[in-house]
Image (tube, rainbow, N blue to C red; front, side, top):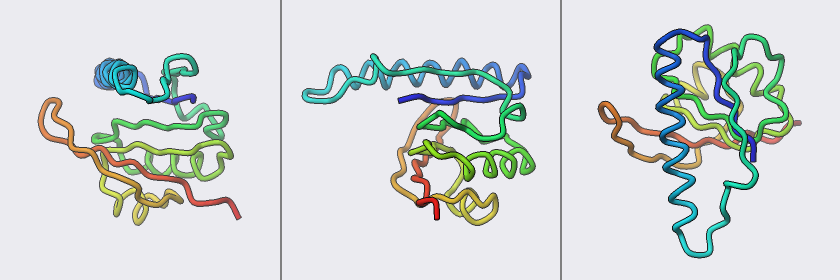
Length: 133
């Protein structure tokens, strides 16, 4: 599994990155504590980079966006890169599926929603990409 995390390198984005890393460490620890679960610790990479420099999200399989404050233009740009990617299997977002699918045009379908409580209450949405035609 490879996970992509991207920002535009502002202070706010750096704080999002740190929060994302905290969540990731918590999930990895939890996975190790669940009987018969497959650990993700041995096959895991995290990239903190400027998404505007990429043309696709290849070779990443999981894309995590703490995207509550992303402007619409950035969502559209990410959607184009996401939709052109061959290997991505999951999109994790904090925006409602109606926005991700209907407004920003990610080619995905809704899978599941998790309630989280960080600095306030958020819903983490897991979406799967539609098959490439």
